[in-house]
Amino acid sequence: MLEALLLDLDNTLLGNDMKRFMPRYFALLAEHMAPVTQEAGFEFVPAMIAATRRVIANTRPELTNQALFWQALEEETGWDGAAHNGAAYLDAFYQGSYNQLQAVTEFRPTAAALVDWAFAQGLQVVIATNPLFPQRAIERRLKWAGVPVERYRYALVTHQGNMHATKPTLAYYEEILTRIGRTAEGVLMVGDDWKNDILPAHTLGMSTYWIAAEETAVPPDPALCDAFGSLVLLYHKLQDGWLL
Image 1: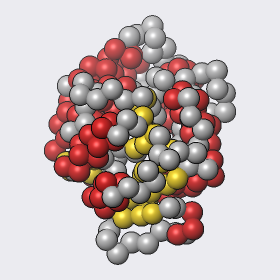
Image 2: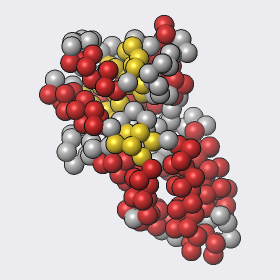
Image 3: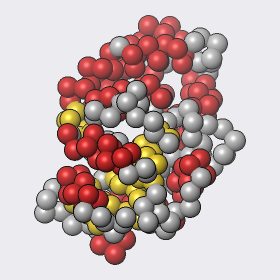
């Protein structure tokens, strides 16, 4: 019996071609951070990428991804983000220039319909996006997707500040289960990334639904996902009683 629904964000609830999104994101971010980081003698985006790679490789559960990010950034550059209000300066970016990126994303009307349905069924709903972005950035993209935190009482929205691991580690999914008080049984993970979403969730014993990029796409190993197809197809399958 289905009790909890874990939903990836990018290219699941929100169309987001990373080949278009990331270059624009990096350009806007570099422009915003330049007044601070140029004075300190480093370029923010390359340093951020290096620090993020260290977050992905993290095996120290005592640190949140956000705490580790700022620690790694200081080790990479010698710049103390805490002493220079780096987090606040970065947050200002996500409140301002970041919103220009909505134009390169694609609204999917089924996202809100699916989330509405899940709450109507009494399911716990988790936004299980890779927690490499700060809370503000994740919440902005949820708003673009039409499923904002102001409207829904999610059981959990994973982000850089509240998680201690990242996809595709089992630790990331185990932390979610612990936080929502569930075992893998009765949990459905929905996502488009085979490595990040489907494989680890399947390994832990969750049901899985792979969001296929194209109608003709087939999963790398059909035995490792319970079903696959579009978000629209998932919505109809659940309405018809799948996993209930």
